[in-house]
Length: 286
Image (cartoon, rainbow, N blue to C red):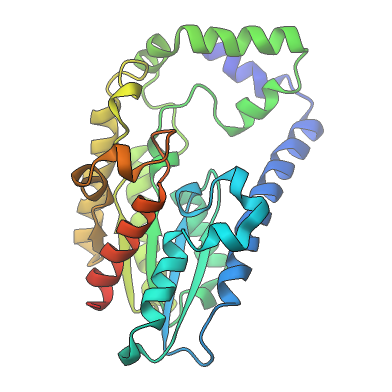
């Protein structure tokens, strides 16, 4: 299976695979840009308080809700943070610059900070990433998209094998991840450095929500893996002087059946509200 994963990319037509990778990125970036523009349109004139959010799909409305973004936006924690800050007279208006993109990792966050230093300048930065970094994958991005270039029967066989033997594959290749643990640490250090260099006022990093029990059997050691990443997040935050927002403990304390979406990974409306409240109190004491 390891050789199969390698052959998926080495035997695919490079141009066709590159087009698929670009198309997926452009689609997810477009959703992120739509949400960002919608939030910026709500900014207070001459806002004195700025928050910059960098997140993965946990910060977005669900895919099926994106068609009615104005209605779905209100339930997201970025919009709730904005509303809370705008309601606090002492803060003299607020703007939230949010980049929430599906499949986003800390690798991508470093690139985004380099691309948009103006989004960090004078802002309180909230980074809510890690789930995509740490999850053990059957296929990395290029491998997953390369499956679609195979004849349907072959693709079905490859994906079916991965589903049937998922637990064994995870045990055999426990570090087949988008962002290995050592690189996550380096990325967190780099993000803290870029926040300072770009004139950010504060940096807050969120922990990864350990998934409910229904995922445990199919992904051996998933709790140990997620907890190792959370430990690294806490350690690197302590080294850099960043604030930790322990979203994992927050959601479990309030019962993950209520705080998570039915998929067991994304936030429910209740989860979004809790995260917004937790962050606003921690960062602004309001």
